[in-house]
Amino acid sequence: MDRNSLQEVISLLQRRYGRNIHTQLAHKNITELFVAVLLSPQCSDPQVNKTTKKLFGKYKTISDYANARMDELKRDLGGINYYKTKAKHLKMAAEKIIREYNGKIPDTLESLMSLQGVGRKVGNVILNEGFGINEGIAIDTHCIRVSGRLHIPGGKRRDPRKIEQWLMKNANREDWGKISNLFIALGRDACKPRKECRRCVLRNVCPSSDAPDKALGQRQ
Ligand code: SF4
Image (cartoon, rainbow, N blue to C red; front, side):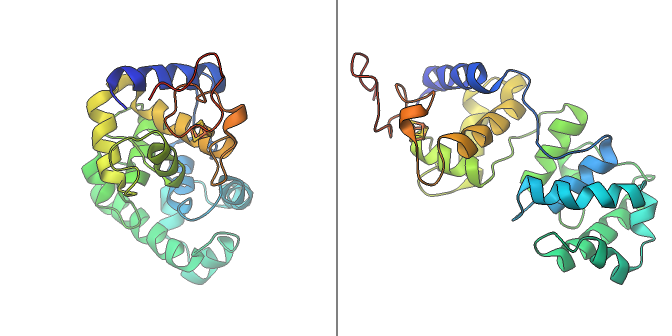
């Protein structure tokens, strides 16, 4: 995979999944986005959305999470994997946002990553989706699988940091947030753990494709 092939991949994926692609995590404001993304690791988006539908009716502000009783918050996150740890992180992060950031969700990767439960991936999603800021690229499990099959450096070794660095070097900065969402869409659609190349939009450009159109053949 080189810079030009990556551009081709992005434009094919945009044609298939849309130019204006965003997270599937339901939210109406930055606080809801922050909470939904914090709850999302090791959990499917529909699972998160099901829980946050009720949660957001009860907890409206960062203070509501900071002031929540831990046993009650744990109960309210019951449908989420690792809900006990996530409840603890959410409350501690909310307390720190009030203490150190005037109650506002911070808008730099460094500040976000200083909050409990916020790693690089979570921080990048919040920045990109919530603030339209591209400081990095969120690499989740779908992005890792797709990157491996596209022969993006770091993909085969399942190294998210290396994949992110290569993508940051080779993609236009304004596309960083989009790439993550496009790879996730592809990973949920055709490039699942059990790949379905025959109906994949990248089948004629992907080095791991087992279904290139005969007339075109594979590029690599
Ligand atoms: S062609 Fe196959 S291996 Fe390549 S991205 Fe598509 S589904 Fe994945």
